[in-house]
Amino acid sequence: MPSTRTRTSPAQADAGTTRGRRAHIARGGPGARRRARAAAVCGVAATGLAGLLVGGCQSPSTAGDTTAKDTAKGNAAAGAGETAKATRKPVPPTPAARQTPPWDGKVRVIGDGSTSYTGPQPGQLKPERLKPGERPPQFVVFSWDGALENDDHFFSRFRKVAEENDAHMTFFLSGIYLLPKAHRTLYHPPEHAPGSAAIDFPTDQHIRWTLEQLREAWQDGDEIGTHFNGHFCDPDPGGGGTWTTAQWKQEISQAYSFVQNWKTNTGFKDIPPLPFDYREELAGGRAPCLEGQKNLLPAARSLGWRYDASSPGDFQIWPAKKDGVWDFPLQLVPYPGKDVQVLSMDFNFLYNQSGDETEGDPARYPAWERETREGYLNGFERVYNGSRAPLFVGNHFETWNGTIYMQAVEDVVKSVCTRKEVRCVSFRELCDWLDAQDPEVLARLRTLDPAEAPDWKTFLRK
Image (cartoon, rainbow, N blue to C red; front, side, top):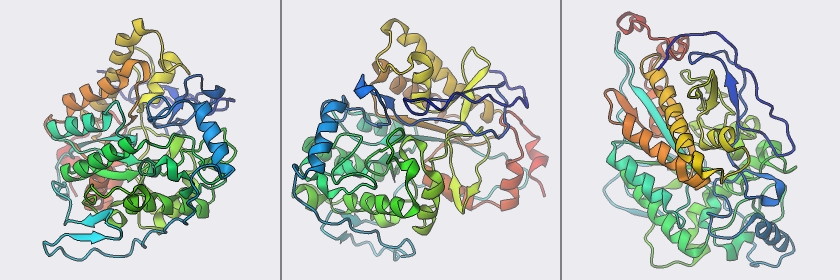
């Protein structure tokens, strides 16, 4: 694994096409660092799907319904009032300033019984301030956009992978994945008709399965973040990249509401409450297609969120705050066998391997899987043996190219999470650790290039 340092500035990929923003691949050696802005995408060039780049964290083929054409028809019907007639307004979230009282050992059921307070989350990282001369741990965060347990059962698969490899993960829940299709008009998206969405609403069975996984994931120590709701992206003229801060607040209030009121919305009476208070647990999210961060950040800050993972991308450097919120971007990692770098998300590997086609040549699947796995491992080895900057890996529960991206991530989890001084954590746990550090130490860590390994015994010694 090369670890030489270079100051070559990466070249920008073409990001302006009629099919939406493309996955980014940048030129520059494996240590490249200059702070050029990197374009990326959280989504899928959908299955012939109306000829558009649909930024879906579950494509229509895996979300439990049918095709983008059917989705468009359903949206039109919803706009005409031909779906469910429920029109209840979204419930705004409780202000983040509210403090959870010390736990007295008693479970407190909240609201309609959809959520509850069962005490502090189990198994969380105990952050410790770095001592002078100490080498930082190598943090790795695996995160998942959408977090639906559908017929592929990827949510349960990776929850178990995490548990078996001493890892915690962040699952970004799309709020409408707890909203039955029959009640879709409860969702009032900015710039769209009630009941509209760029992803499919779930089946009742998928909601039940997802609730089970959310409960078990939280009990395992994983984080439940948000992927917001309707997944509206460019080239949609009303996509999240165009939303005002007030519209982001509108979207967020509904993300809270769909979790806090799933019992009312579904009518399910045989499922226990989720074991957490979402008003307190929700610490950040990732915007669909990585769009709209500028206006999203003031909304996040006003709610007391601690981080945002919606940045279009950056080099593997130690994180900093943006507008008072920790900024956790996807990262450029060295592409195997090429003098280029690619953003650390499955879609970006897919786009550079099979373009808009999510079912490419099966004969190439083994090579593509190996490229993806080695790309993530290249990024890991560079910082593990270098600056120790956290590595962020973002993915979707998708079957793209024969599920090779799922297997690649599973292999990486098994390879890195049990290594010496490695901590596979959630974004929330990383916030805990960063907030516990001396700001001057973090500022010094941010001066390092990814592959730059200082003499740790002297580098952080005051």
